Amino acid sequence: MDDAKTRTRRRILEVATGILEREGAEAVSTRSVAAAAGIRAASLYQLFGDKDGLLAALAIHAFDIYLAEKQALAHTGDPVGDMRHAWDMHVDFGLRHPALYVLMYGTDRPGRRPPAADEAHELLLKFLDRMAAAGRLRLPPALAARLLLASITGVTLSLIGVPPEDRDPEVSARMRDTLIDSLAAGRPQPPDADPGLVPRALALDAALGAADEDELPLRPAETALLRVWLNQLAR
Image (tube, rainbow, N blue to C red; front, side):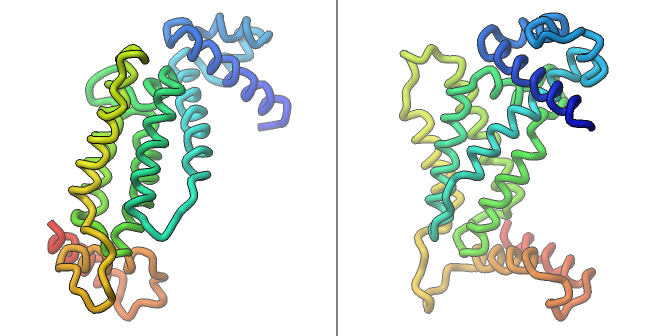
């Protein structure tokens, strides 16, 4: 895409974001966005197609904004504490950008995955892999990610639906601590302490996932089978 089209596309997304956050999704139409951006509707159609295409692109644009904030979070030596900070940042983003958040994580019909589902899943897995590698995770990362995403989006969407003056800040904090405490395998143990079978199995699985295939003494099929067994042990 040439520079002129890139600039036009960015301008359209910025204008559409403004309309969405001020007036809601119903106000976002190809005609209203084209007029506000000072372009012909035909130019918008060439870049995005119809309104559904524009909203899909807008969801990706919103997730880019979210990712920029998420990636700015500092990692510490405590992956469980980092997970709590990431939860708070996620909820805060949703409350600051409610219309964008609903577009990112909502769905307009049953069975349709939210636009940000895959990206959110991958981002959560990175946090959970750090917990597993540190021996701090009780469940396989894929299952833990599904539980966390369901909980955090449920909390955020429910808070968005409550008038700001009626929101209880304890709702998010209590859900965060209840869920993360159920997933975390306790505080870091001394080197000679036995953390238990599940955290050890998940830590080895995380190490295998991060290793270069050339560094492993096993064939790829053997490594894959071992990781299946380790995840079975962790259930």
